[in-house]
Length: 145
Image 1 (cartoon, rainbow, N blue to C red):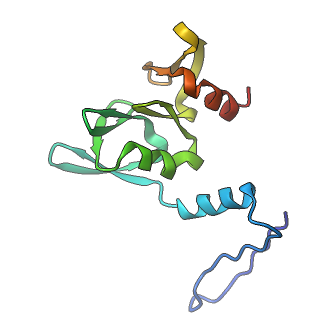
Image 2 (cartoon, helix red, strand yellow):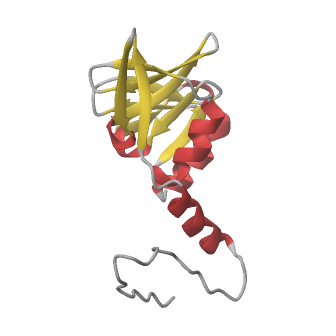
């Protein structure tokens, strides 16, 4: 794949043009990455509103129809649905680990087998997350195992 960059005047609008033979999975992934350029989420801590960079989030969890973002030492409530976060952040190393959890792969220290074909992931902050049996294959593929 050839990449060309052209410097333009400040008064011209920036644009990205993709020329391809067919709209395959690789091109769709590039488009998705470009569209999810914004990697800052809005989190709530009581009445306080915080801007949270996605790379600082260890995992998201759905609890009683509320979505929480777990960072190193703080938890924020989010307004998005879990499936929206999963779709939005899939290209940024997040994956569905269970029905109620989406995990940042870059925050996983190690993974070990658990009961009934599940995996237990230990995160950099020491927290343990269970990877459901149906998502084990997804994690192994994303890790290249």
